[in-house]
Each structure stands twice: as C-alpha cells, then as structure tokens.
Image (tube, rainbow, N blue to C red):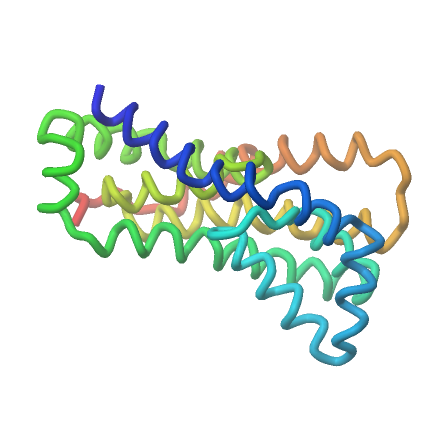
Length: 211
C-alpha cells in the first residue's frame, strides 16, 4: 500500500509545478513560440532545445512542442537525435537521483514488504512500464523515479528508456519538419512503437540479480 502512496505522492510532486506554471509554459513554448525561441539562439538552438527537454524532469515543459520545433529547425533526423537525447537524459536524471538514495533509505521509505513488491514489479514488467510511459504527460518522471527507487536493473532501464525516448523524439521531430497539421496517426505511433521495440529489445537483456 505504501508503494502506491509513494507513486501518488511523486505524481502530486510533479503535478504542482504544472498547476503553477503549466499554463504559462504552454503559452511560452507553443509550437510557434518554441520555434521562435530556438531560432533566437542560432547555432546554439540544439543545446537550448536539449536543455529544455532535460529540464522536463523539474519543470512543466511541453516536451512534444519543443521536439517538433527541433524538427522544424534541424529536420527530422538531426532534430530527432536531439529530441530523443533530451528525453532520454531527462529519464536518466530522474532514475539516477532516486536510485542514489540507496536501498536502505528506500526500504525505510517504502517499508520492507512494499520495497520487495516494487522490486519484483519493476524486475518483471518495468521494461514495459518505462517504454510505454514516455509518450504520456507526467508519467515519465514518476515511473523513472520509481524505477530508481526500487533499483530496477540499470541495463534494463536504459534500454527500455531508449525504446520509449527514441520513437517519441523522431516522430515529433518529423511532425515539426513536415508541418503536419493533423498528426493523429503520428501521435498514435509514438504510443504504439515503444512497446513493440521493447518486445524485441528485451531479448538482448541477460537476466541477473538486482544489485
């Protein structure tokens, strides 16, 4: 039960900045505004976009709008690489910060029973959860934190994170580069492709005890 409360507590923690600054951030980084903001930095636009996506861990940055803007500025391939990298690094930061507290602190926070329950959950189905969560609002940060807290295998987490971040980054960069006005199919792809990638990628993971 404590595992659920920690999950909900993290969700609330990430929701607070969204409730406070979400509207202004959405307006400041709408598709057109994000393009204008990136072009202002000229040759450093890639770094500005990358930094915004990485800060999505702390701030309610409209990540998909930034990814689309990167696609508009750099094209589908280069923009997709930058967008994917920013999303990936944001997940790695969330995972690493929560994993850093160590198993003893995690046990005290979750309780021994829920700590073991969380470890089993992320050991068995964590890859699916991490990969599928990247296209949703709020969930990516919460899931990455829970994966770190329950000490999900580093190799499994990074591979699942890549399966979720890479399609998301490239698909929205493609949307931005082509100027698609009704990208419903592309958005559906960003939700459907990560689990399919994980279905294939998990075969390359060698099972080992959680450290």
